[in-house]
Length: 168
Image (tube, rainbow, N blue to C red; front, side):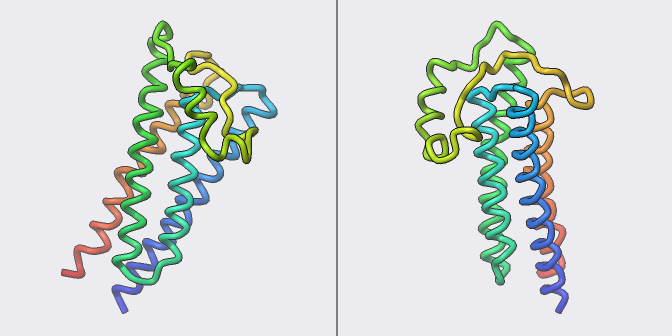
């Protein structure tokens, strides 16, 4: 009974995490379409990371065994680590604008990914990483993304540990 309650808590957390990730993608699309902020290659890679986190979180929430939920939580954490790398590099580029994100190198790779042709509005490169856009509540979008990814990398394993320590 207690194991089921703990697993249910993890599932609810995964659903919430998936919804937050989709909301962040929606916010990025709003800023792109309404505010005219063109996404760079690293922005698009961060969107992929958010999408992967959401997909793995929703699938993990649908799983019924502790082991299967843990597998998808691990995939969520790995996706978040990819997001940390992309967002961290993006933040670095914004602090040192003379460094480029390598649009000549990254753009064809990112635009060659499957979602760029299926949903070009959301997953096609259209800007430069060093372009300064107005901050949101004092932080750039890349900084907000980095915060979200780092929190995910910390909170998902912490939740697993917290929920599983009584199972020994």
